[in-house]
Amino acid sequence: MEFFADIDFTPQRVSVILMLVAFVATFLITRGITRRIRSQRLVDARADADAGAAEGRADEGGRKVVRDIEIGGVHIHHQVWGLLLMLVSGMLQFAFEPSSPWLQITAVMFGIGAALVLDEFALWLHLDDVYWSSAGGKSVDAVLATACVMTLLLLGYGPLGISTTEIDDAPLAIPLIIAVNMTLVVITVMKGKIVMAAIGFFFPLLTLIGAIRLARVPSWWAGRRYETRPGKRQKALEREERTRRRITRIRLALGGAPDPS
Image (tube, rainbow, N blue to C red; front, side, top):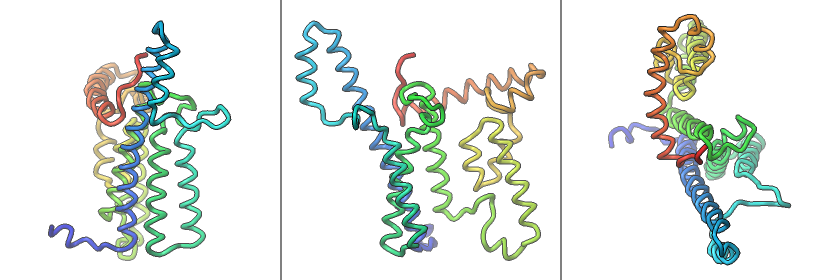
């Protein structure tokens, strides 16, 4: 409890707390709903293959509680509603700079919108509906990275390891610190370690580790630097296999199993 006693719960920090809670809760609820919809779709597919498919569909359709939203025959992905929420909350912030409680309300709106958008991160990354494919696991990675960044903001960490007091105390050293830390972030991204780079943007020691260690395969760094170094490439492949097993367990637990390819 002493830790919480030392935290200054300003309106801005309370807003970050509410944004983080809304973000995590919305992601978990959304995944629960989409998994339910997929389960219903599988039931319908089995009913189609059955001799009494017509009656089976009618009965099942009457019991459906959740389903995809369609307007004019077009499936509206939930990232659309998320984008609208983020746009509205952002415009309200810029236009009115609201105080409490509207500051906290817009923070919740932004958290909900961000979760809806990033839950379909893989779709707008690939420009294809890969939600239930193995590539759809990238959405879970994006959500985890964003949740970590929000947590670091809540704990008071500044971007690139710089705080406002340090800017006032050492203005000449700040550009050099920013340049070094940003270089580490870029190298970490080039090595394919996106989550580590996102966290390291606030905690540079992590990007130092990411920049020194072997790159993931495939990644830009591995493709350019390991092609002529078979020994290093083999080590990277062995580490990648272990890393993927851990990532897959996390993705399955949070996002659900992908459809069979």
